[in-house]
Amino acid sequence: MKIFDTHAHYDDDAFDPDREDLLASLPTEGICGVANVGYKKQSIEATHALADRYDYIYEVLGFHPDETWEMEAEKDEILPWLSAQLDRPKVIALGEIGLDYYWDKTEREIQKKWFRAQLSLAKEKNLPIVIHSREAAQDTLEILKEAAPAPGTLVMHCFSYSREMADIYLKMGYYLGIGGVATFQNAKKLKEVVAAAPIGQILLETDCPYLTPAPFRGKRNDSRKISLVIKAIAELKGMEEEEVAGICLENAYRFYRLPQGKDGVK
Ligand code: NI
Image (cartoon, rainbow, N blue to C red; front, side):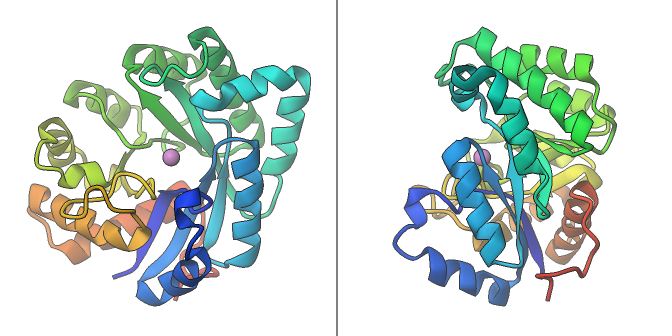
């Protein structure tokens, strides 16, 4: 079974004790690709270092809504800077961008301004988009309708909204990012979403070190644990695990516009 982890944060401090050993071992355990998401300046630079070092690690770069204060502080200089980072050879998408009204770490109007600015940059750069949206369903949808990225070019990472909202995004031709939460016993709403969503529009992700699948909740997550998410999806959809894994792998390559069997894939 080959797995592409479409959303990970291996630059996180949680991996400091054993990052090198872990990342060296993942390709021998079926992980054929990882999209590491650099979500603020420091994390973007750390993502460059990981992508330079490991064949199978790709870069997704942008400013997380919580971190848009960093963009606001640099105003005119920040978009040219981000644009230059996106020109690196292993950059496969712009993200994670969006709105987060749960943490409310940055003023909402500032979040919206830089969400729109980064959506325009993605269009200019012709890059797929990774969305982070938490407790901001209506405003996110409104801004995405305005920007109208093409079908197939956007994923709602760690999808956490209703079945109705899922249907809207699926009809727009976008992907849903599904991870550890799908294995949680109390995640009734998400299980309904997964059961109903076409398998061709699901991307597998960890968001590691966070959102570790059951029965390892509370422990550190890593890409190998996606096998537990595959198991949960297979059960919900009445499919074989191998089939779920195979289709989601193709989805990841299609979304990130990577040729199958390219570097890193064993
Ligand atoms: Ni993330």
